[in-house]
Length: 477
Image (tube, rainbow, N blue to C red):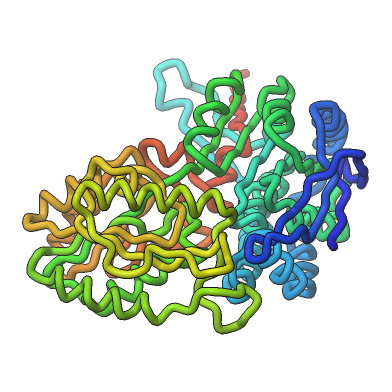
């Protein structure tokens, strides 16, 4: 049993109320953490005011050193973090090790950005009234950043908010998902050991009352949230005059044109559709295949999906672990049933292995009508939809027939076809001959429409976690 207090202004605090952490694969309680309250948030914000003064007074190099030291400490504890991720998320041990490795890189990229937060001169005398004046701007930290993260990547998505904010010289208050608070609290241990000014960091597990207090407090200047569209809408309505960064959902697509590499597209659909049991915001959910190669693609995809091993996430050979809860299994079954009633067909999967209620077989559903939830909503489950198209414009319209627009993968050897998707697809990222789930942690990452506002990636997060301060010097006598 893993027991963790919350972190308030660098001090570990217990609470009589506890949040239980459940291992999705077995349903057993594997951890308990202190449950925060609105009062804890207020205390954290008061501490953060002092912490901001301390961390913003550090030199850029000192902040760089702290984050690089944290990366070294995380690397030493990598396997401990990975096994804890398996227990709280249910992802496979191989997926968990990948998340830890990515979190280390996110830390390093953030450390490097600490040394290059700069401004720019601009020619005042380009204006008729600018004679004798010099102008430039600098970037300064915003102050206090509130960060809220989801269950699927509790370590790396926390890192994507905490590390760049600290690199800029801000204080941070983090609320991890109540389902997966263990590794974010362990991250707090690492950062404090690395020498971060203690009052600059608070990590408060909790529920909606904690999130509301963090996002509405007038002293918070930036709210950064990753999660569902529903909660993102609530946050944008209640935060007041603040910067808001939202990384929300998607139902990402792959397009396989008639000249595309079918085998590679199949592999990327499998990798993107079933990693972490499909519980990734850029999971492959919809695959649109040219009618000339549709049947061949479906047959190859079915055979590849049948080869995936479903089961114990701690087993090194397991490919697909459980969903986060039994309720999510029931939901996706209902969505598949609705699609079947409207003419779709299950090509493979669609069942639950006996004895493990949170497991769901990797599933392929074809000929799914666009009015169904399985096509329109975010499945967040190991289910891939495959539909045919005839004309290029039809495929572009199918991709855009969504309230989301995060990333898109297109398989073609025709540069003109590729450019049509780059130009017309309403998404934040277009990947040619690669799946939409590919991401490096220093890229500008975010989406169009209801997939969010702003971009993550340390360099681009700096723009949200800093303010521009303009300086004008009058040099006339």
